[in-house]
Each structure stands twice: as C-alpha cells, then as structure tokens.
Image (cartoon, rainbow, N blue to C red; front, side, top):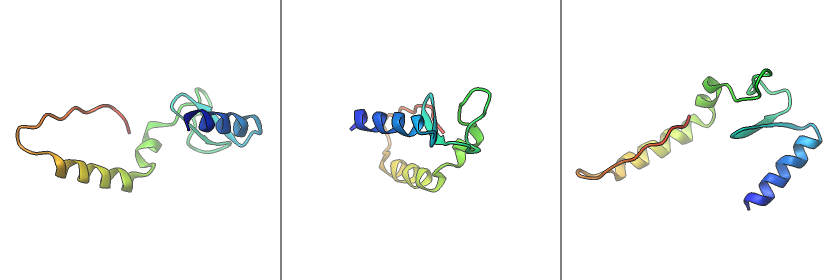
Length: 76
C-alpha cells in the first residue's frame, strides 16, 4: 500500500540507505540526485526505465483510434 511504501522509504532514509526528494528516492550517494537541491536530474530521469516507457508508449498508441481524444500529462 502507499502507506507501507512511504514508511519503508522513511526507514531506509533514516538508516542512510537512500535520499528522498519530491517525486522520488535514490540510493544514498547515487548520481541521480543533485546535491544542491536533491532533485533527480531530468536527463537521468529520461534514461530511467526508458525501454519499458517506450513499450508502454507503443501499446498506448496502438489503442488510439480516429476520433478519440488523448490527454497527455508531463513526465519523464
């Protein structure tokens, strides 16, 4: 559950195993966080799970038919 995930992340952060930031978490000392603001560097986010993201995009595109409306949200 979301509550369990948040509790697990909090515990891992308290143990110094990861760094939490708005929208995510990364292994402590990872290249994924910018030390100044603890945000994931956007260029790195584009690369995270890029193959599954591409497969999802292709599957979603195959579902779109003429006359349908598609609403997109931002993300990496």
